[in-house]
Image: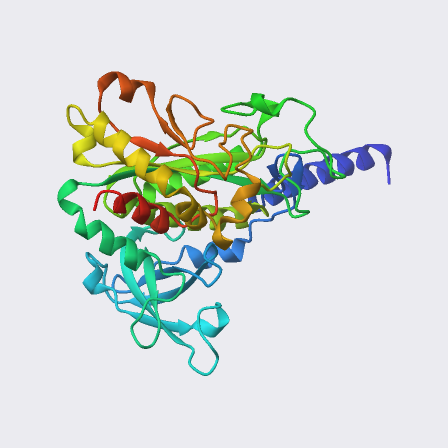
Length: 395
């Protein structure tokens, strides 16, 4: 073969190879980056094909979501319904095997899902829906981890007082090696001060791509999603729901947790709500609850706010057990009096003090009306339990 033919052949081969590489890159996203972790995650062309099929108009996916026996993990399963549900009456009750979710015994495992709230599905998109459910035993009583039933009952008793809640959910993102995103591998700790991570950018945060996906999914779903920010410990973030009247803020918080965990699946990332995931020298993970009733929001409402603060502190020992999993024992690791927390064995309320158990904003004090912020609940608390306790102070 002549030298000219060899050169022409090599040029043609290079051009073909270049086209093939371009096509491959079009068919697969070679890397997702989360912190310092790169995951080979090909986008499967067959998966895309099937998930983008045109479905019959009378076939709607309803993803039933519920809290399992752990009190923090969420389960789900799909059901096809024949029309777009406009209200809860159009979504049927369903059953599941409670013995496989820690909610029933094998000999009597039929457990009932009762729909309580509907959201648009950001994964399959409209007209498909996500249905938040309460869980009931076969005899009609709420399961042990169904705290929504009690919360709804309490809130109904003070509905004339227009109770409003805003909830701030903190969480931590972990890589598959169970070490926080963006932290040095080989179990290393960040070398920069953690205070640069709060509302930070660049090297001081990790996992922003997950946060961005979550924010859009929450807004699309119909949650009263109010915002998000990077938290004090690198790889920890926060999202906020509310302020919303009644039980919706707690419903939204649970759906926000579900969406977050589902999105993290796509990035090979683990979401943790543990109140103290990285030891005593690192900041903790909380779930602050903001609360008000109509009387607090009216002129002179500061007196009602202070009255409720006193009740919350007088019943501190009782309340703190309901402010996290396992009777709040893990939350004690977070409530140390350091890292902007109050000690778990004491309770005090104060203006503008983030080291207080219950905080009143300066602006609230200046206006003489507004709301209070209970800073004691752990990241893994059940917002239904916390909201019920806050509401009970007004009965």
